[in-house]
Amino acid sequence: MDTMTQIAALTAETIQNLWPEAEGLPTAEDLRSLLAVPPDPALGDYAFPCFRLAKPLRMAPPKIAEAVCAAWAHADVASVQPVNGYMNFFLNRENFAAQTMAALQAAGDRFGSSDIGKGKTVCLDYSSINIAKRFHIGHLSTTMIGHSLKRIYDFLGYTTVGINHLGDWGTQFGKMICAYKKWGVKEEVERDGVDAMTRLYVRFHEEAEKDPSLEDEGRAWFKKIEDGDPEAMEIFTWFKDVTLKDAAKVYDKLGVSFDSYAGESFYNDKMEPVIQELRDKNLLVQSQGAWVVDLEEDNMPPCLILKSDGATIYATRDLAAAVYRQNTYHFDKCLYVVAYQQDLHFRQVFRVLEKMGYPWAKGCVHVSFGMVSFDGAALKTRTGNVVLLEDLLDQAVAKAREIIEEKSPNLENKDEVARQVGIGAVVYTDLSNNRIKDIDFRWERALNFDGESGPYVQYTHARCCSLLRKAESLAGVTPDWSALTDDEAQALLRLLSRFPDVVLDAADKYEPSMITRAVTDIAQAFNKYYYEHRILDGEPAQAAARVALADATRRVIKTGLYLIGIEAPERM
Ligand code: ARG
Image 1 (tube, rainbow, N blue to C red):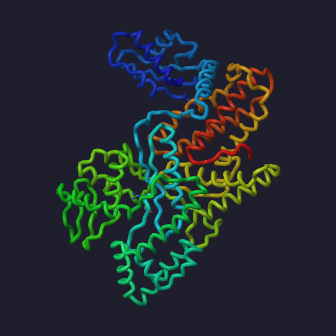
Image 2 (spheres, rainbow, N blue to C red; image 1 turned 120 degrees about the vertical axis):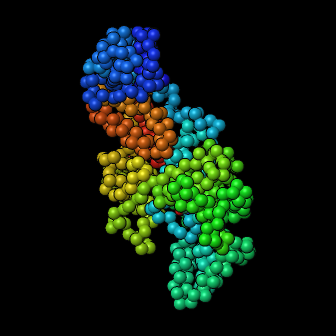
């Protein structure tokens, strides 16, 4: 039980004992949610406002505060003072340190983990790139938010399924095959990958301006893919392999992987039953030749299911995908990590699933996010003005390498550390704000070792590791927790003790940035502690306590960074 919960429970008990007859008193849980951290530390570590008790007790809040404080008999947990209708709690610092350190040490690297997700499954649809297109910076958020949420849910005991819902369906692939048959060179596609495919696509449109009959040829090739013609399928599958090979380079750099690559084309033969079901449930209506589900009652435009030529669309595939995922994985939640531009699309799809009578539709969530913009001048691009993620990551590593060369010329594995720091800087930036906020990426900020940045947090972790290497002589000494009663140690302990709540909250709100915030606060609190106290000096039992605090800090930072997809080098 954490300290706030403990104080809330003891306060509830004290009130209950004072007024056993009173009705409508707040529960321990209510009390916990009312406990606040006072802005001025002189007013205590926590404060409880007694106003909520005035009505059930028919007493003025200052009187209540006085009575409860007088009856409070838990000095081992906290002392308490009544001030203007508030109960101000001052933690028993030694006790708090001992309790928190015991919890941290018992959990080791798993501090904050839990089994609340046991037996529950979460599907996560993220990254979901498009075939024959390059990874650009816009794909970073879906990839990293999804990857982080997957780790967070795993950490909380859920079974997770990571799905890359590939955009591998559409008439453009017919055009691309047509262009390849006419002007393509196998070696070029093999050498340049997606870039070569893009050139073919551009050429197709240029030539089609002059010769419109090409459009028909393109359509004919698309029809061939639909019919499973062997030649068309062979080229299409090859395009797909080449794109995925390109993407794998980026995924490797980011340390991201998936359990399934079932994309849009995977649902080719799984839509018919869903369409039939929509018909059977009288949900399909005809509108201007097309078949749609009417959503007027829900104040939304109709959800298009079949175009007038009978072709299925993006939404049809998403309906089939949701049904398939439910039948295959029996998910409790299915998260779609997709940019906010697709808000309406997902609201429509989820509503249609509800109308079909699927109660599990409630578990489908669109985890949307804002845009990443970039101070473009700083980054040269190979093709026009889209910033390619691979280039961005490579530049980040190169820049990190320069800084490390300057700061730590004697470091052994500089290349490896530069990789961890460069990638970490980019990922940290991406996950540093509420996901719905737009991000303005700037190198100075991302790679500022002293500011709020990935490298800063990583550096703090390395600093803890270095301290521990110097503390070997203290191994086996029993720590004296009374060494951790100063302001700085207490502030750090308080942040560490809250980490498990942060993880739960981040999962609840689908918000990895809460973990980014927590590890940054912890790093700042540790550095403050580090500057104010000589950790290794003095009484061995006291030094051992301070070293144990550094060790716990190291573990929590490492765990937090892991949960947002960032590595933690031991030396920097
Ligand atoms: N490929 C799509 C895009 O890049 C994203 C797919 C998201 N997932 C889904 N099930 N619709 O816009």
